[in-house]
Image (cartoon, rainbow over all chains, first blue to last red):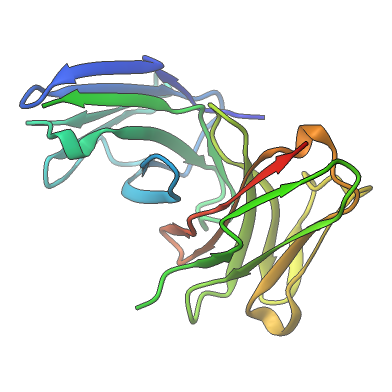
Length: 112
Length: 111
């Protein structure tokens, strides 16, 4: 079963705009991770945020985590056409990265 | 550093035929995963290995699926016999304690 639920399911924006994607989950976590998947490729790890962290940055990415609401958001600033991909949140309940539960993903299209 | 290698990249078979997928993880990664990803869905774990031991195979349909990881390095996932519903992308991953590294996957089509 898939624990994380991302929304929206699909997002289309203009290059240069910011993209915000949300993820909600059901049970307590040790950490939450975001992955990107380009068409026909494997997933690439973007960022990990632990349950005791509220915000994390990596380049143009900003992730927030609200454990009281069991939700996370991924913000991509100044989007580029190359950001076009599917984005997945994955929850880790064990803390050892031993079992990730992925959501269904968000399809992001960035128009040049 | 080479990433996770999977082969074949694509496989088309008729139902009831057997099929096997191969994965070579990143050197030094003791943990190896097999996932199945259906169209429009996220990956779902089938089996996890720690070295050569399968430590979580609760989601593996054991009537038709089998996996092995001899010598704790590369791994093979087999389906016998394949059914129409097995059409999906089969992803292999290996990990450190904070990140999973995925291979490109094998896209299986069962006709």
